[in-house]
Length: 262
Ligand code: THG
Image (cartoon, rainbow, N blue to C red; front, top):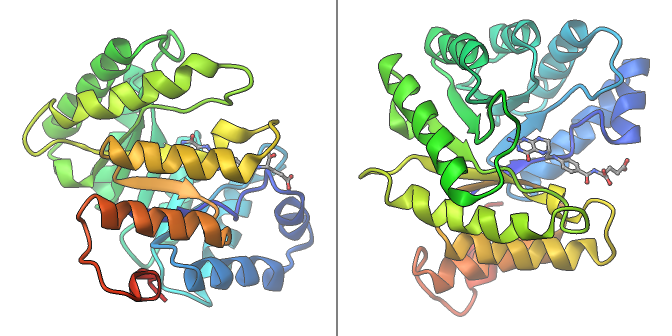
């Protein structure tokens, strides 16, 4: 499982404040903690309130790269903010994200090709987020085809079926699992899959339990990567255990210790 640390997101008050105050140490601490806790990538999102998102993205990328060479997953809907971040990245980045909407898809796929970046494609388009698994898979197929036309390797493409909070969109949890299963038989090899796990528990009670339970269910359906909170150690232990039970890692008595990446 590829772990993308979610904590450097202006959605969090500490991060929004740090961006505003240009407080490097607050961001660098979050970067180092997540890397220590097994993150393979760090998500970088300036947040909804950022007054100058281009400047904020550049500052975040520079600030993080001062303390780690862990690859970054640049999380913005704006092509100009994405390109500003990509220009600064020293490692191969991940673009988070495009949708199936044609204009957007073309703009972001062009950036992926130009900068040699991986890219996440959300299973939504100009009509919004689809109701069922079949409609999600159809948009995913459109994104896969467009990426291949642009010469982007399937290996660099991650499809996100888009999970929503269980307290407002309960049937989505099942639709997303079904989409993950369908994507696995779309092609051989199939495109990779990713989820923004914490979405599922926004505004609910027992957030950590919901995140942890859903993650292992999604792993059972073939999920390849997740944007999640790596500082939740019980979540990481569940992830490692699910990978073991899926025969992705070999059992040894100290499997938790052995498969924690740090
Ligand atoms: N897919 C993709 N990218 C994504 C998402 C996705 N990026 C953003 C998001 N969804 C994943 N990241 C988060 C980060 C934080 C939270 C949820 C998802 C979160 N934040 C607290 C909250 O809203 O309750 C903030 C609490 C605070 O202010 O401290 O839950 O789906 N490709």
